[in-house]
Length: 130
Image 1 (cartoon, rainbow, N blue to C red):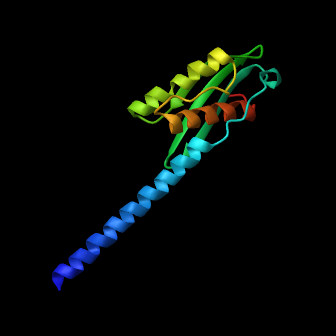
Image 2 (image 1 turned 180 degrees about the vertical axis):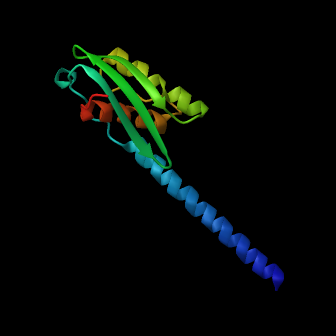
């Protein structure tokens, strides 16, 4: 009888773990599919802009400096501490080269790339000076 109770507890723990994993995967899929809206730099005033994007228990934060309708710098202030997150930071250079956030994500780091691109978008949409 004790063995049956232990098996039931083990089954419940496994089911709960699968449920949590499924929820996290659904959230990541949502981030991977999120639309990144283009920004018209001709409408952005000179200045520093800070933006963020949250998913799960994490928020990535970027700060951008715009001068004469050009993004001059993008500083990533907060990002995950993982190999994939570091790879995803390559989108900042792509945005600077293209002068827009309509760039390809970094392969194998799609979710974090999208989160950083969304933070870039949110910063410029906020138009609040830092």
